[in-house]
Image 1 (cartoon, one colour):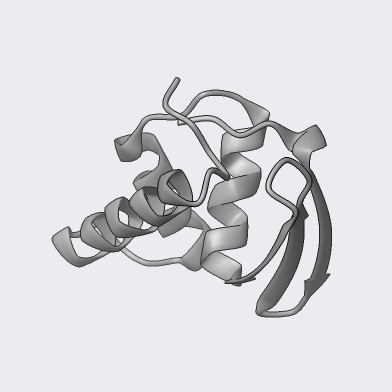
Image 2 (cartoon, rainbow, N blue to C red):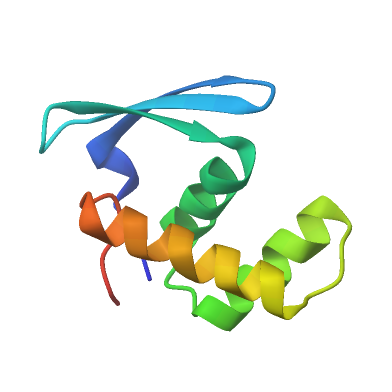
Length: 87
């Protein structure tokens, strides 16, 4: 997955981020975990496994099936709204 950083304007507050997606003209409110994943995808293309491991490290939790499912669901939602694309 990857994201184009220039397409979004960001504002962060603790556990919430607001981003304006220029191509769609839509504003999105996301939690800290989703914001972390978006920022990760901006840096370089990242696999689902790598994203899960990075989020686990960020949150200080183990990589398990629940976290993997959460990341997969989040990635699908981000793909659906056009904030990321398949690399």
